[in-house]
Image (tube, rainbow, N blue to C red; front, side):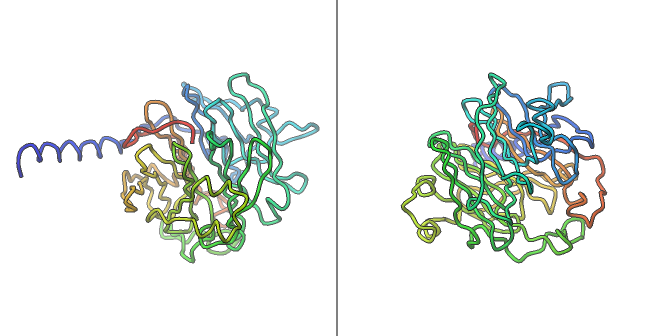
Length: 357
């Protein structure tokens, strides 16, 4: 091998190695186990408190000293009482490029699912959009979201049941929403077991089969990426097609593309080069689906005990939450066997990454 090629190869391998080094941002107490995470362009960090552990707070802000405070405030970060303020249960959240923290609030017997926008610059309520029937239904479990700043829209994954998993498209200009690809081959789970620590993860007493869950959007807002948690394929569809109300659901399905291979996964995000970052939950790792469709593991560690959600932060850094979800009562036959590994990590993206997805 010629010296110049040898040096180039070494530099490339070093860059790959360096990019995969995890830095712990914070260890988190049992009172606020993380779900998903959002990072503003100023570096403010917000995350949802995962409802599978039954804690009273729903969303918190993480400060530089590692402490957390209820966000937006104690009233809004808690379950509603005698007012409209409050959150029922949040998993998905993200910050738009104009500083709106969008919270995906789940349904209860008394309330429909909602999108709640909070202005982090003025610290005031921006907007509430209810997601009632037929956009959601009795099987709905709204999970995560991606913000389309170009087209003023939000896209949501609704896990539902294996037969009802779907995407939800919300037009922020009008407030109108629609349910698409419900029960399709692109949103439903594959019949594969989720095996972690030599145990088949169960949900409701049965082997977990979780559909449309991970979701992200390209930095230019032209493509939406998504897949089933219990699935080995990552798909994408153009936002232009998602927003085209003249397309039937069948016509939309024909325009979905398979982007590449993926493991059983929870969260995803993407950099400007088209590398889709994946939390691989069965082997404690983080990887990428490259633009050629191949999957590559970036980092594996016991520290990544169910890496859950991603967020792109300043300086091309990617943040990831860890929450031991397979040890939560909901996925562990009613038992909490967590080991105190709740945390947030970050690492350098392989390419430039734009905040706001």
